[in-house]
Length: 177
Image (cartoon, rainbow, N blue to C red; front, side, top):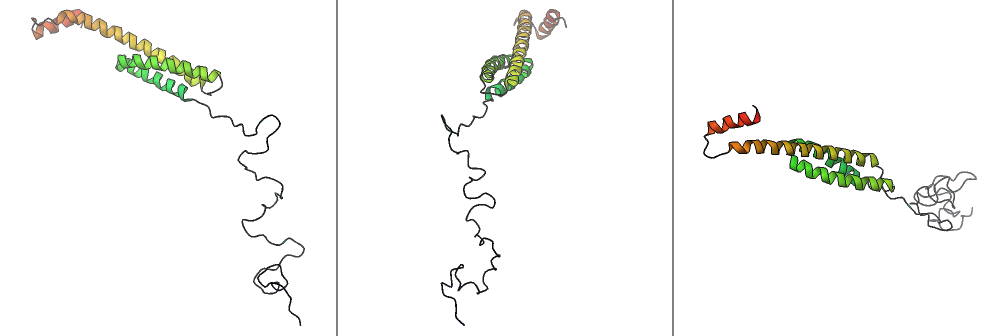
C-alpha cells in the first residue's frame, strides 16, 4: 500500500487527511475557517462590516462623514438654574437674588437665541429660566424696597442718647408692632 505524498503538517494535504487530528471535513462544504479569520458568515467578501465607523464611500459633492454635533444646551440649563436660585435668594438674601436674576436673564436670552439657530434643543428650558429670573428680580427688588423702608423707619430710633427701652418703644411705634 502506498502512503500519500505531501506535507504532514498541511491540513489540506493527502498525508494529513487520515491522521485523526482534525474533524472530518463535511462532504462538499467549505473547509472550516480558524476563528478570527475570514469574513463573517453571511456577509460575503465584498460587504463592509455593519459598523464601519461612518467612513463609507463619499458621494458626489461632499464627504459622507458629516456628523451632526451634539446640541449645546448649557446656556438653557444654566438659565434655568439661575432662575430657580434667583427666586430662592430673592426671598432670603435679596442682593444675591438680584444678581442671579440678572445673570439668569442674560443666559436665558442667549440660550433662546442658540435654540432658534438650531444649535440647542432646550429653548423651553431657556425661556423658563428667563421667566424665573425675572420673577426672582421682581422679588429681590420688592424685598430690597421693604428692607430700605424698614431701615429708614428705624433710623430715627437709633439715637445713641436713647436708652434701649426707649429705642424699643420707638421701633414699635414706627413699625406698627
